[in-house]
Image 1 (cartoon, helix red, strand yellow):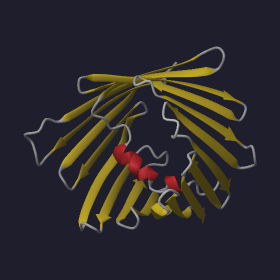
Image 2 (image 1 turned 60 degrees about the horizontal axis):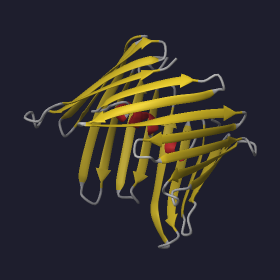
Image 3 (image 1 turned 90 degrees about the vertical axis):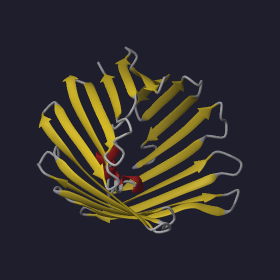
Length: 275
């Protein structure tokens, strides 16, 4: 990806460290690849006493990628991605059946010092999303807005700023139409960025609520990593991820509320198998 990246990348590193791969469900993922070059991935998730799942097929030919996903509720989602039709651009079309009004077309453009993304819902009264990011030398500023043509009103307008260096990443986001301020700081403790500390503070102006979450990522050995997080509400989470064999990853996570010890802790287990 060229330049400062898309607006959605601002604050993503801190968000992933504090939330990615944490789960309270049981999940099994299996991937394989056919001789024709089609990648198949099946997911099975146990939520409570119910099992849900999906099968995703992905095929890439030159600059075109086709992805089709079918879930247990008979929903079919198709995504077509076209890269470099015009230099430095990417077009993504998404359709979901049987919801014929769920189609969306997105176009992304990347430059050395900026990026632009626009998405429109393929309906008679479409919603339009637009974002732009400019930056250089690790500094990026971006903004996004959403407009609903049926009501003639903005559905969102957000802005963000990030400073990225090899040792740290600072991100500030003004979201929810200016009602929420979210700031995060990620500090890498080694050159390979396998060990890091993160802190995120959120301020909601309409309710005068503040939230603070701290966490860390620690590489125990080349095959095993540990993540923890704790917020000011007393909720503590931990995640252990181990590569059982190449491309096969076992993830065990848990969370408990230190201010409500009478509640049962949440535990999750995920196993991803790839050839």
